Image (cartoon, rainbow, N blue to C red; front, side, top):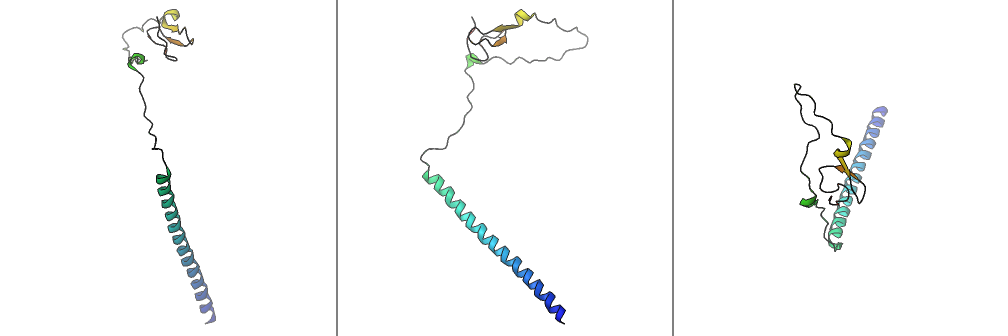
Length: 115
């Protein structure tokens, strides 16, 4: 009979410790929730500046270039187009020296207008 009481006592201790741990965790969670809520309220009240919103602005129309696909689907029956000569395919910006397409009206790096 003594062995049954010892096992029962050990089980009761384990269950008690588990329940105590659960209660402590619940109380701690409630306290942290209240502290977090107070911090949010304080942050909303103490802030004098409105929240900043980031808005993407597109470049002005004079700097926008029409979309030109890099690769075009080619039929197998036709021959490939001739390669452009290196001197006419690119031009360099007189202001910053950046390489641009020969059809560009503005520099892609600094926005300088080409003559």
